[in-house]
Image (cartoon, rainbow, N blue to C red; front, side, top):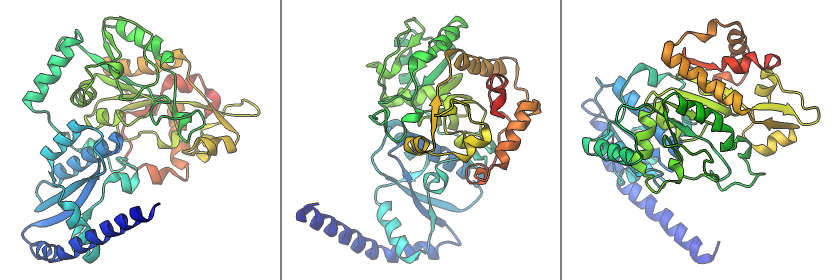
Length: 393
């Protein structure tokens, strides 16, 4: 760091402190008003869509459930905004202003007001309390936004009322990653999803491949298959509209699927990893990547996967573990399972013997309480996955 940059950072830090101290009297007044208006102050972390969307959805659920309180919550957005439509909807749903940042820093000095810390900082934006299940409250689109989204969809050839599925597959472009990067074990090949896409189209669905940064385009061509991630019509508005209105979502576990989740759309997680972080608070089917011992090629049991629940490719390599992607058939069968549940009605899969065994092992894992709390009745591992991987349990 050059001397001039150091001075600039120092001056900026001192300026923030001076502003924060000067605002302390306002914090004191706000505290004195607590019997009338209970001011709380905080922020949303807005640089990553997964955390931004989940924290907005969870905060809105909390707000709905405490509607009878005398709370006045003030927030600011921390970091660059990853999606302008989410920002617009957030500002319609909450009191969000840039100047709140200075009040927040002032409150950090005197600690007189309750702080609103986003779930990203608490537990990685996980709905461990089942807030999304307790209320159906969600951020609404304006009539103008709805009309604009429908017009954009019409340009693809889609007509209102036709069912569509969103598919979001993470690859090396997600973080401009090299094959040896920290999260590369989570990447998969979009071509492995062609069988599932083809079958969905045969059943009358439209399929929209979503995402902002993708390495490889779809090779499959069909009038009802839209490689939206590579489309010139892609927009922040349509990103949110698509995922909030899809029949269900298919995802490898990326930030985009959080939008579908906060709008209570069912999700099929395929090639998901690590299994210890699976989504358990909403209607979802999970088919994890297979973990095998590098030396023997033997598949790890669930208990071993949980014991080695890492978040870095290097950690898995050092543990002598590598990942095997699901086959196209395994991917398709997991998706077929969700479509069947939505078509003929959901049945509690936990009465299935293998599902019972899975949840017994999963709940007994010593990391369970850290990442999980409320368990949705519709959250389960793919029955097809369990039936074809008996040694997993």
